[in-house]
Length: 453
Image (tube, rainbow, N blue to C red; front, side):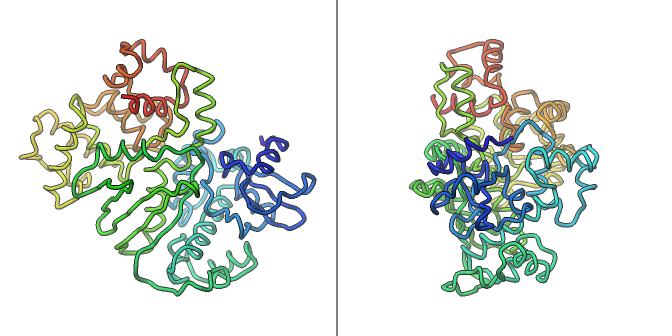
């Protein structure tokens, strides 16, 4: 439930920490805005507050063209208390409702479709279909405003099944055609790099997340230099830099083979750089629960580009240093021509010449055989149980995979020697007891502790 008076105070002060956590529908203009909209704040009696842009859109408000809701950080990664809604949002971001029904989505989540709709209304103020449509529309608006992609390409990149449906949706929401929404200075081009801005809630410690990724960067696959991160996605290349004054990162995407992959890549970027984290709420909880932690509120938990790649890297990192695991990962990338193998390849690969023990090779092959049946959208207990059922994978590996591949905010590899050292040379049991205070944000506490070493 939104507290209207608190929302209005955040609106008056244009507090960027609340960006994306609520939207304001202004009854006198019929427009909905972000809390940081540069326009003069409306009178309190003219404001309605909504928990999501989809809810504001469902109520009949149009997106503001000044504060541009499409560049908002969006919903926090873990909203309310509903893990089901969180899992559903991950699947929607991956296009689960582009071609499938709400009934099919609910079946995958293990709930009834009526219950799923009720959960969405309780937490987001809108139905799953409305949320999916809202995300497609806002992503299309971002591409119209920030890129030179042809309108027809944008329609399909945003997940619309036809150009006519795309035109109708944009006309209904913005009361303008897609071409009217596009900046007049943009000349359409189907070639060349695509540059997008993706927002985050401050504070954001770019230096910390960059240091984490640099320490684990595999030559030829990813690189960190002069404050810029680069990743090769075969055939695309993604370059990320921080725009601190704009509370956003800038992503430059080159060599994209099809625009259909664009939305997937953008979602990957959001997860790798943890752009949806509610830094203010996480810091408030951890500081209140354990002041001795001295939590840095700009801490983020880096995600991954590919879940199976991350799982391989987690297995490689068992009981060796980060540098040693990076060396092994580099050898695998070299063996496969600059990329990691897919599960079917890894299942039959003997990994000769990599420097792995027979036991570690057996674990990788078992993981590869099981991976397509592992559902990383499930809760932490399910993920841990599924992964630790694989010979050679223990709780440390399972929690590390959950932390970075599933973006699980409460994952906590408590047996990690570096964590125990950073926490004051505690035993594993002592650290686990201490970490109970940090739930449900133990992953953020872990990243904070690692960064202090």
